[in-house]
Image 1: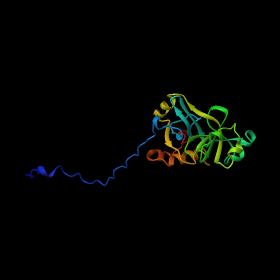
Image 2: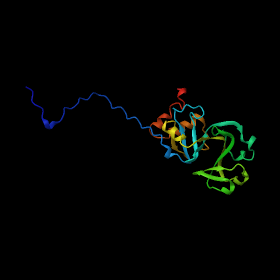
Image 3: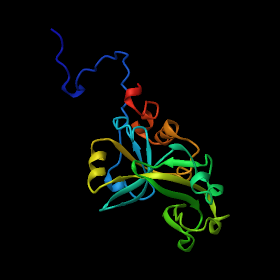
Image 4: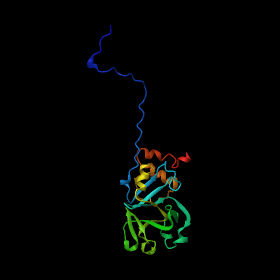
Length: 217
């Protein structure tokens, strides 16, 4: 008769099968509405299939109870700044064209510049960090030598109260911090989207290797 097991010895040891434990799946953190503020980025998630915003990065200019305003980055048009605003073209970074800032009021020009100091009297209103809104009705000569870069956008992206909260809750956008240079980045389209996603952590970084538009997969 086999000996009774020793109650002090604990349960029998499970034999080693040679299987490796599956690596932990990184968490997916896209932020929430409380993370949105002027100077943050809204990065389109692959589930966002609206052609207006699929694969885009939006720089937030203003966020309050009345809604959210921003501009799409990295979407250059074919319209030369010198053909519309000749006084400002020499201050603009390459390419010297209007960038499509979004679907709202596309006949409206909105200008962002980077500068070390604000100066409302010269038409420089701070947004976040070194990024400023520029009053295009002002005199560009007043800003010569004071800017480190400038870009002009046609139109903007806007959300009414509650609209952006719903889209973030649906997983359409990730809210991430911006970095110096994002607004005037030389990258555009999918390259910019991958750069922003790739510097995140967890599954957001993993997504940088996937198509921004699932239909392209």
